[in-house]
Image (cartoon, rainbow, N blue to C red; front, side):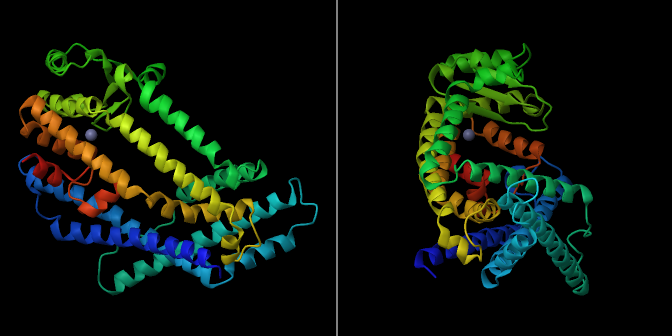
Length: 414
Ligand SMILES: [Zn+2]
């Protein structure tokens, strides 16, 4: 096997394994610490509600462990056996030379994908049953009753069909080729720039989901905060979509900057907590964080898209998995295995930047309000309201989220 192919495949396996270990570490952390209410939450949530919240995240994490491990198992199975190659050859043998109503290659791609999807779902279901039986035999309460849900299966099949149709169109229009990575890059950047930096506010207004702040108990104090920080109060908008989330977000640059207050934030936060949150978001804008992050995303995305296009058009990689060459179905499988390793390239730099910016915005808010208590209270309210994980393992959060843990943020404020 070509050394470059070995490197790429090793990266695929290692990254999958890394994510699996991360989930396991998170589960163990929650099992160890989840029974006692973590310090910033004490007195702000009923102990029973807290442990319930941790338990729901534990269940989610346990399911993730199972998904990650089965995904590694399939990857290794495909590499060690000629399963994919055999299935592809067999599919070709049963499709007549002129194809049916579509071109032969497309019919092969559709049949191959359908058989593979059904096969993987079946094996996945068997494995789930096996885990269930093993847990029962060891006297442990099973993760949850294993059941087959037709709705969920239909959703998976629908998503598979959609992805395959996209792959067929991309393959036919030759846009998966190495030389056209910049087409993807350019289209992504234009969306980011238009939506993220300049016209986010206007788009939200066109969609009629945002409106200026209403005249209520918050308007006076927010006006004072804006005057103090020299920020236009009419750049703060409410997003009144039917969402359960309570949070705020800053986008844009210069006079295009906007702050959105979402959903239940007004009901969930006290005046002090909302002002602290707004202080944090104004901090992001005053320190030009959206512009800096968007610039970095453009650089890192360019590199990753170039690498993605290069690998996607590298035939030896397909042959290592048993495929005859590049086709819509093989490209789809290759993409699904490449996306995770590629998403982790340069991720440490992105996360370092984002965490730095979060700490800076926290500092800005605390200095502006001369109060760190209400910012901490706002973090806690937000987590409880949004049913987020109150106590994730710091490594887990560092990989999945731009924000540090509450404990880390509180420690940085001290
Ligand atoms: Zn922030």
